[in-house]
Image (cartoon, rainbow, N blue to C red; front, side, top):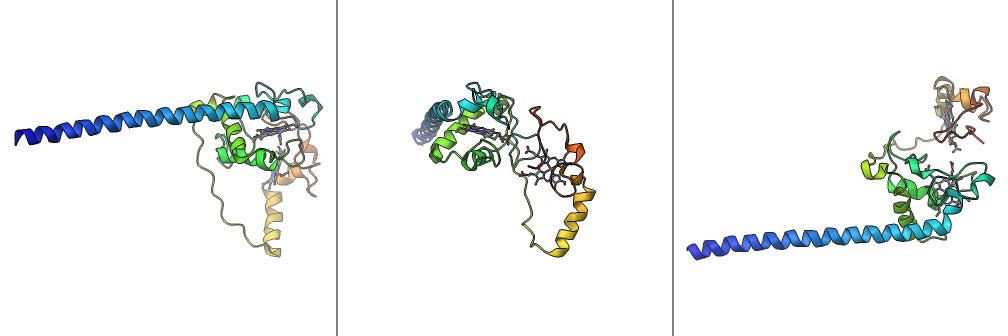
Length: 197
Ligand code: HEC
Ligand code: HEC
C-alpha cells in the first residue's frame, strides 16, 4: 500500500516537472519567434519605410523635407489612426490599416507589394521605436452601433448636430475646412494642418 502511494506521488511530481519544462521550452520558442519577426520587420522597414519615416523612426527620413504632410514620428508612440479610446496605444490591426490601404491625400501609399506576413513583421519593428509598447497595453477597441439608413430626417438631425457640436467652427458651413478658426491648428506632432482638404 505504501509503495503504491509513493508511486502515485512520484508520478505526480514527475508530471509536474515535465509540464514545467515544456512550458519553458514553449516560452523560449515564442520569444525566438518574436525576435525573428522583429528582425524581418527591420529589414522591411529599412528597404521600404526609412526613406520617409527615418532610420530611427523619428519621421525625419531624407524624403521628408519634400513632403507636404510629414511622415509619422513613431518614437513617441502616438498614432493618429486607432480604434482604441483617445490616449490609448493602437492595436496591431489599427497599424496594419494605413500600411495596407495608405492614407488618402498623403504620400503614405498602400504597401501591397509586401506580403501580409511582411506587413505584420514591420508593425512589430515599428513598435520597438517607442518604449510605450513595452510598458503599456492598448485598450479594447471602441464599439460603434451599426450604420443607420440614410434618410432626409437623419440628414436634418446631422445638420443641427454639425452646428451644435461645433464641427462648423473648424470645417466651415460648406464643409470646405476654411473657417478662420481652423487657421493655425497644430496636430500632436506640432505640424500645421487643415481640417478638410
Ligand atoms: C513616401 C513616404 C512614405 C513611405 C515610403 C512610407 N510612409 Fe508611412 N506615412 C507617410 C506619411 C506622410 C504619413 C502621415 C500621414 C498622416 O499624417 O495623415 C505616414 C503614416 C504612416 C502610418 C500611420 C501612423 C498613425 O499615426 O496612425 C503608418 C503606420 C505608416 N506610415 C507606416 C509605414 C510603413 C510600415 C512603411 C513602409 C512599409 C511606410 N509607412 C512607408 C509617408 C510614408
Ligand atoms: C478644432 C477643430 C475641429 C473641430 C471642432 C472638428 N474637427 Fe473634424 N477635423 C479637424 C482636423 C484638423 C481634421 C484633419 C485631421 C487630419 O487630417 O489629421 C479633421 C478631420 C475630420 C474628419 C476626417 C476627414 C478625412 O479627411 O478623412 C472628419 C470626418 C471630421 N473631422 C468630422 C468632424 C465632425 C463630425 C465634427 C463635429 C462633431 C468635427 N470634425 C469637429 C478639426 C476639427
